[in-house]
Image (cartoon, rainbow, N blue to C red; front, side):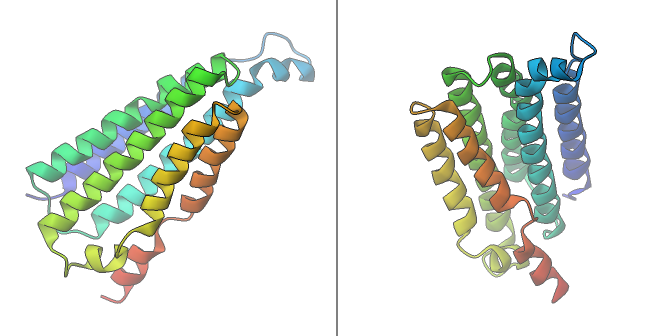
Length: 192
C-alpha cells in the first residue's frame, strides 16, 4: 500500500501534539518582567519538548521519504511511535508544573526512551519490508546514533535520582545529537 496516508496521519498527530503543548503555556500573572520567572519551568520544558517532537517529525519525514510503500506492520509500528509522542504533552506539563521534580522527570525520560524505542521499531519494520539492500538499510547501517540515544535516555532516567536537572541536561544532549536531520538518508537518496 502507498505511504501517503501514513505521512498525512503522522503529520496531523504531531501537529496536535505540538498544539496541546503550546496551549499549556499560560501568560504570567503580573505585568513586570520578573513575573516571567513564575512560568520559566513550563517554558523550558516546552522548548525541550518542542525541539524533541520536531526532531521526530524531521526524521520521520526523511525515513518515509526513503521508502516506497508500507504494510500493516509498519502502520502499527508508526501508531506505537505516535502513541508515545502523544504522551509528551502530559509529561511536559507535569515537569513544568512541578518545577522539574524527581518523578515527573523520570516519567518524562521514560516517555522519551519509549518514543525512541518505537522509532527504532518503525525503522526495523521498514527495513524488513524493503530489504537489507534498500536505500534505507544502506543509509542507516547499524544505526549507532539510535542505540546511543537509547542508552543516553536510560542514563538520564537513572541520573534523575542524583538530580533532575542533570537528567534534563542528558535528555537535551540527545536532542543536540539529532537536531540536524539524519543526513545518512539524504546523502543516500541524492546519489539515486
